[in-house]
Image 1 (spheres, rainbow, N blue to C red):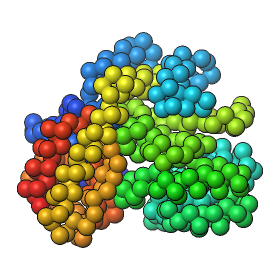
Image 2 (tube, helix red, strand yellow; image 1 turned 120 degrees about the horizontal axis):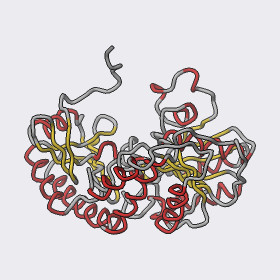
Image 3 (cartoon, rainbow, N blue to C red; image 1 turned 180 degrees about the vertical axis):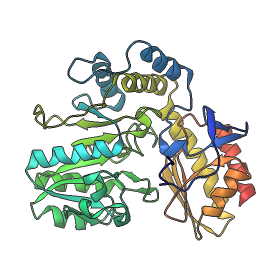
Image 4 (cartoon, one colour; image 1 turned 30 degrees about the vertical axis):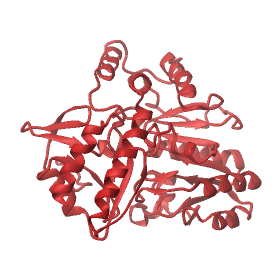
Length: 377
């Protein structure tokens, strides 16, 4: 049996990691400015994280959600103060797509409506309703095209207000910073107006914080830069630092109904041990603050470089979520960064370099990356 090919792969076998660096099977060291699609929040193989998972694996790896799991309770109790939302409740799942799927279902249960508004260039996942709310028809199979979702331009408040005024919208789902969409930032005026319009229409506001959340923007959640409080918040990626996990933070207005939501593996003992260790490190090493400080520094360095290179048309982002837009495709640039300079980066669209390093990236490592990037440029 062979693997079913779904990704174009760099011909590199990564076998070891530490902090913001990884090594391949030939012993070559790489600087990681991508964090495995923004998954690595506290750094690769943090000793406290490794010890916490190992200890839990030796005690109990899994039991079903039919019994009390104190680790889930502890995670909910820790996450509330960490993110600033003590009045929300936590539903634990396995991935970002599953988190968005359940958030959209909750909104529909709550309102009794079927219609969803999403932003152009949004990416919310690959499961049934999440992929329908993703603005990429190429990855939505015919069975996923149910006609539930209307796409509107990000930051076009008038367009969202007009659709909400029709009175049939269950939910608006939006990323405060679009990741796959090209590091495009929602504005405060748009998000605050959207909050008011959702309230007026009795629609649910969902903030997808799967890529931009968990400290990456320099606040715990990216929407917290914008002065809004959503009804539902979805998390994944950085919550487990590589251990598969997702979550929905559910506002107090939602009634819990037994059997309405469910999951086999969500919130399992190993996942919760990983998530608790992540919160430990984020708090003890002040990684949210580091993301803000190092991100500001890296953005400034990139803008200086952009001024000297006409093919860089824009540099944008917040914290350690940064997009560098070029007037040409970045495929060759990324290949040269990997194979010549030993740096991993990501991409959005065909012409945007996407930087999503671990939140522990230091100023010295930011300088190291810039030296390697400038050599390639």
